[in-house]
Image (cartoon, rainbow, N blue to C red; front, side, top):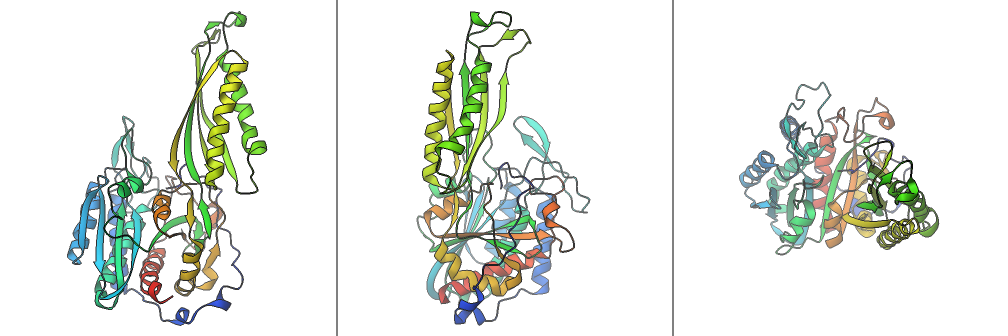
Length: 434
């Protein structure tokens, strides 16, 4: 998850006012709670997965474990979707809607630095290099929570109104190299074709929140994430005679500077925030040679899809014309990534009584916008979606200073697992009644 996410992101801790005053009668229903035995099974699954992490599109062991579990529960199971994805389908005993629950399965090329007894020592290949592999973003918790919810819900199958899709998704962190993967490929391969869900629900663990805290938001929650490349072509010459060629370094510097005015001066940021950042500047091999070319690369984040397209167009225009003014040329390539992750407001409101009841009103907070990105967005663009954050930093620690998602020191309090499992269960049970 959270491409280029920094540890400065934190949950907003102001409760939305007036929520409890308008709860429907179903909010007073007793919550479904998991047994201590099932909670321990979820913890055991999580620790096993944490000790055996797998990179994107390489989740072979993980998907086999998931598929075997779902089959043992008597579900219809599809495998090898988007390479390693698994989907289980549970038919309730009563007519009703179809709800999709999603967990992502892949780990990161990060060498673990925690001292937990089940720390990962796994290695893998990433961009041609041998790397450590770690569940540094908590996808092991996501898989374990959804496996636990599947077991509980299969046990009350006859009482369920409607059907449930359990989506175990590979490659949320991005498919390697030129491969395809993730939510987008699962949809292309038709997971919603035969059974189109009425809603899709997801939970992501979040080190910036304390254990059991829930961060929600109506509408945009996480940013779109797009990568751009700019190749600035000049004409090589000796550094002592810059007039003898065209300097792409100067042109690249002007492009970087001029591009900062796109967000600050050319986009209506009253609609939504946006970020345009350069992360790579490469060019030249010697101090006294002006090179032929400079390569630039960066990221674009925003929360409005119309603004997104305008930024693409204005970046291309700015780079090309800035280079041209120096006698150079600029070739701009934009690689569209994940769209904005946006929560359906009606769905959030529909399930808010359940969320408050399960997590506790004091633990449910409206989240700030997050400039990280998530490919849950593809699912939520197809059907109404709701994606929430689940805090996993122990209550006696300052969540704002906890190691962030993607850190080699990322740590999760396993007490949060029970909250996540019970949210999945109760959302499914309550949805037809709300």
